[in-house]
Image (cartoon, rainbow, N blue to C red):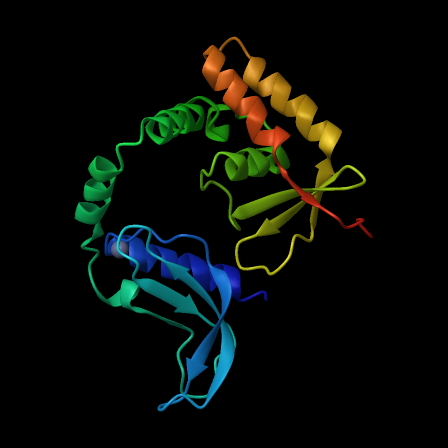
Length: 207
Ligand SMILES: [Zn+2]
């Protein structure tokens, strides 16, 4: 899987230069051959605005390219779609939650805290959906025995040991309580909720 991180970064940059905003790259079975005769695995992401896709394969069959997709070849028309969706949605709760997340993203951005450990910064980035680390941590789960495991973009499973649940709770509480951060009551509750509802993983960490 080593080759994927670099290819994903490349695809993301190319798509961004066309105005697309790619979501997470996920391992996907794609049809191959013309006409399609078999399937193979590739990492595929879809633009959040327009649905155009980008795909990478670090070990493509002969003659196939490592990186391809409509999101890399055409400009994104989707900014318009996104604006339309926003005005269409009009759901007050969603808008409010979005506002709180945006505010938390600004106030708790790890780049504001130069002394934060890289591991905690990656977890904070993942919880707040801020893309700051490379490779990008996209999922954090808690095991039944109280450990935190993380999954980087381009990987199939949560396999990185990040620390204990206690470690996360302590550091998170410290961060969101900092007077300088200045969270409002709602923001503070939302921030606590972010780690209270972490996905549970019924698996014991071996290693
Ligand atoms: Zn797009």
